[in-house]
Length: 180
Image (tube, rainbow, N blue to C red):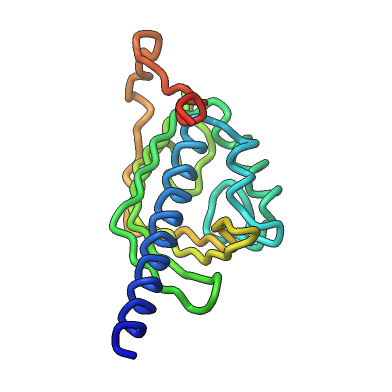
């Protein structure tokens, strides 16, 4: 009996670790799809009933479609860099989880725009947290709720030079698909 209990615990631990890794990869894809402007791919990360709060690109309560449309419009001409790290995950039922991710984002537009986060600027560096809920659907973890909270926002001033992007190597949008 002890061996079967130990085996059951190991199986659950293995499944939990697989679930955690899947959620880590989900969040990594979120950051990459936003920064590389892969909007159709970004939409695939959310449940159909997902809701969003705390974003300058979409009003609180926005659906996944509204969120992706708002982000794609807002970041159309911007350079964005999103980093998420130090996740805290809690599994609160079969196929359900919540998480908090520390985050930092850098956004810069080629000319001044109206920014709630940094008035009279061409961008900002922000620090804070993502609070998220996840649900497993068809054996895949998806985001069903996302809230962005801010601890600090540092403006990128108008006299900050727009970077020379022509000499930078760009990410291959299909890199992982090429090796699958």
